[in-house]
Image 1 (cartoon, rainbow, N blue to C red):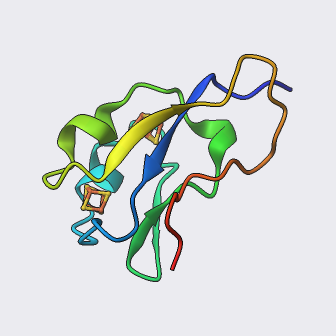
Image 2 (tube, protein in one colour):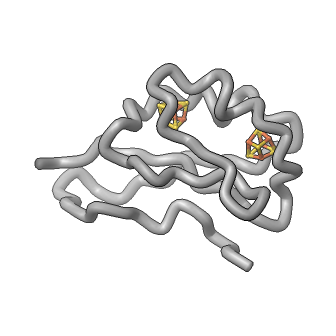
Image 3 (cartoon, rainbow, N blue to C red):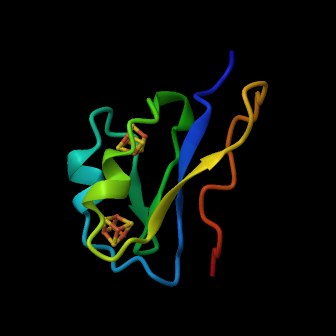
Length: 81
Ligand code: SF4
Ligand code: SF4
């Protein structure tokens, strides 16, 4: 199964764990893990980018992993502590 083309990439050092992205996500595929937003279920992400626009500190960008990716868990956190 192919995953959506783009995923949210959370900059861990910027995320304040406010939870806004979790609340706005239409598929509830984001979670706070160790006080950083994380995408444990990338298969559920519909690449709407709502999490990008709601983040008050601009911690999220969309990452293009390419249309042929079949990765189960993409590297959604660019600076995992
Ligand atoms: S891009 Fe949309 S569906 Fe994917 S995690 Fe963000 S809010 Fe949720
Ligand atoms: S909205 Fe931004 S700051 Fe808040 S939890 Fe999500 S990524 Fe972190």
